Image 1 (cartoon, helix red, strand yellow):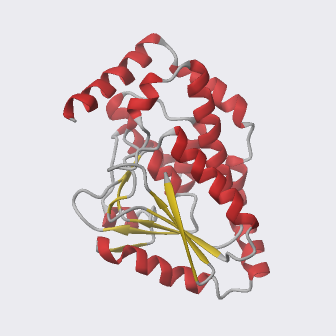
Image 2 (tube, one colour):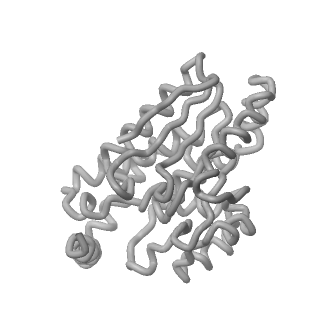
Length: 253
């Protein structure tokens, strides 16, 4: 589901789940557990989250979502929210190398990082486009999106299902730098090395203070949030729309 390579006290965490890195329960569990472990690893001073060139992640695994029972869906969302908690709470320098498209649920993963570098290209987009599919977005995800863009811009982009290309995303500070796809990872390593030069105690305390509002967003009872979200989305008409979308995806294979 993911691979981890270590170099110069840096962990490079690479999403590795099929052609488009769809976010399945297995992948998000591995991501949560990895960040929890790396936070305690004294041999690691910083992390890069990335994907293969051309494809960071296509977002949630809709095929899996459509087949979930209520219990399975609840377990998935608990784990997804716990992964967001683990990444936002990660105390050391954390850079995201967005090597390709990263819409919806993948967008929110990237927003947990301290700094984001995005691949340029017509197919490489980021943003929350769920309204184009009449799909509900969980509260924690919406709050992180609003934290990044500001509430008004976040809501406007949600209404129009706006997907941002790299230069647009940089203009809105969704990402902080853009680069050709093949250069994204190396630039991420370069920026991480700058952050890692700061005394660790100073960096960690400054990060905690500067992101206290983001930390408050994820400091929630994830079990209650997951139960409420699954109850809402378990309505027959909403389940039918997800199933129809999954069927369309299946027919394209």
